[in-house]
Image (cartoon, rainbow, N blue to C red; front, top):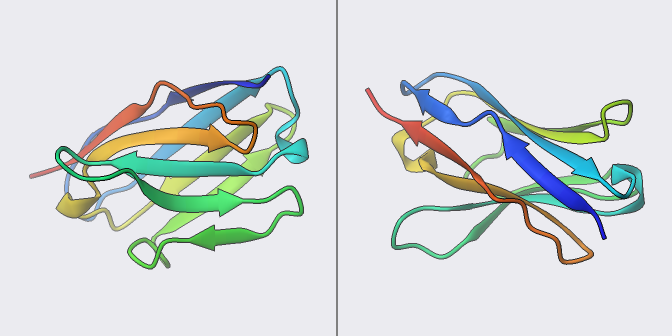
Length: 112
């Protein structure tokens, strides 16, 4: 089973950018679909972006045009590039794969 470790979260001002990383071990990221979810306090976990095994990417309407999901095979890592961040993007962000694995999450806080 794949293991996932997220990193890259932090505090950023509105309009700023961050890049989240999801480092995978135990399985190639090209053999599975990889997803980024987020969960804000008091809210349900929300699917943010997906990159499929066939490299098809999909995004939640709330992040289209601002977030980009990508993969680096050499590092076996999936990234979530986030720009034009808004306070409503504040959440814990989690990496997830189709074999059921979740990472531990990384916190993103957008605030002035």
